[in-house]
Length: 142
Image 1 (cartoon, rainbow, N blue to C red):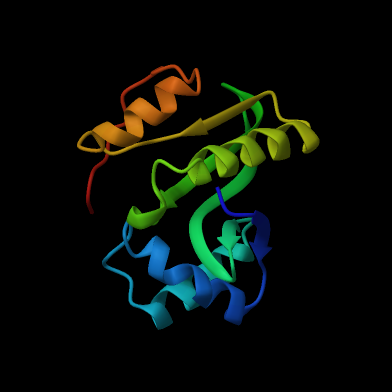
Image 2 (cartoon, rainbow, N blue to C red):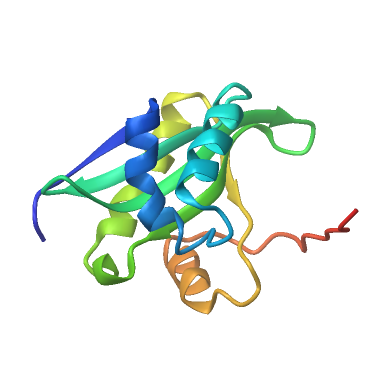
């Protein structure tokens, strides 16, 4: 595997660099809308981490630290995606490991995420990382 590094996108330019990868998971967001949305969400605690190799973003994860009565303090992964041409090379595993360590550094007791029912490859990935399926997620469009 080529040398990779992990960083956090904190400005418009670094957020925009993540868009081509995030578009595989969130195709409804064009680049400008994505940058503006991430900027708004950052004000509410959203963070965007990315893995890059040779200056190219290969995976990214949107996450936040929260606390609730059910889980205590936790890291919630809103978005986690690896570029198709970077899959099966350990890139997603590296980012997932970074998220777990970030949760520990932030004093979290748990890491949580939701995954679309159709994302079978992602489910295999999460189960291989020893995640448990603990609930059903329900949604109502308004």
